[in-house]
Image (cartoon, rainbow, N blue to C red):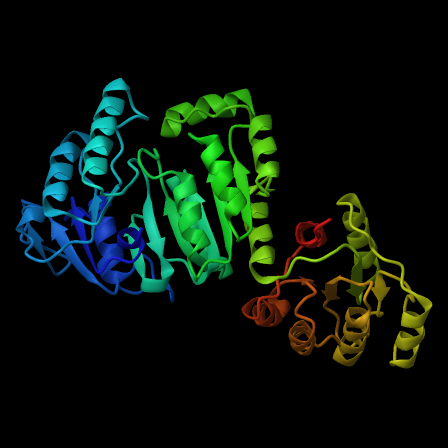
Length: 453
């Protein structure tokens, strides 16, 4: 795996002068960091070799006719040539003794029977040579830690603590675009396509030992060896969240033509996920909402407090918490006495959800947050802020950050409701590992995942 994720040298076989081609895109990603301007793009830290027998240079890189013409060692070969040429290229890679191979090219098991035969022969040859293979028919691999965009994704996402393993390259592409806009950080993004050699559980095992990754997200169409998948998932020390495609008969049929996978009954997957301690997401958005929480917040016992400066929002949040089976605890009289003495507004709710009233400044938030977190029966907080003329969102965010440092064993989930004027404080929260959601139900869902029975 080291050659796939931490290579010192990469050869792009099929590098092209055609700016609309996959081969051009991969080379540009490696030497320039991406197609679109982004603060997260930077050139790959190692050597990059372009392989094209019909060109002298591309993007300032000297071209070689074959990987065998490169004198130095090549750790990783990224293959983007027509499927019929791939077997020839793979023989050259074996002869060169490359460390790993990513086949971007499509036209194999997902295409027809002949493609499956060709794919099986490639895998057999590489396994005999003990060279790992990602793909074919995949987007590639991104490692934000070393600026390696060995894919044809248009840009590099922000660095972060969430690993994403996807059977769909196009889905990964769109997620990267979204991540740049939302400043959502990834450690690794892996598109494995036809999973001809390395399987999803191989990548889970790798990410489990990856120091940058704190949570693992999966987009799954099909799994070949369910027992091995469950065994490795159970052993994984990091939380895993999965989105499974093919719930319906129509979806299952579509999968077989997409990556050549057998979908299997959705109920079977759900049972396997439950036995393997895998969290199930229902949507793409939920997949990453949950990951954001479990990557940065501790797991806890039930018993949740809600603090808000808007009564209606507190009621809605309590409803969502109850829908998810969370215990919005009743505040004890001793807690209320402490709150009474701390400078609460005379009209504050004196119950959970704790409504601080609309004119609440950061001092009132600070008192309420600390008093509730000090109570042994309150095991986590959802903190809501609505924006009003007297609200100081940045000061409130700083209060929450300090409270998290003081009570690291108790999760804090935030809902800073609003947009333009709330963005600076949302940034403070996220940078300090405190998940912020723009929706009360999302916050309740995230807390539900963090509460272990």
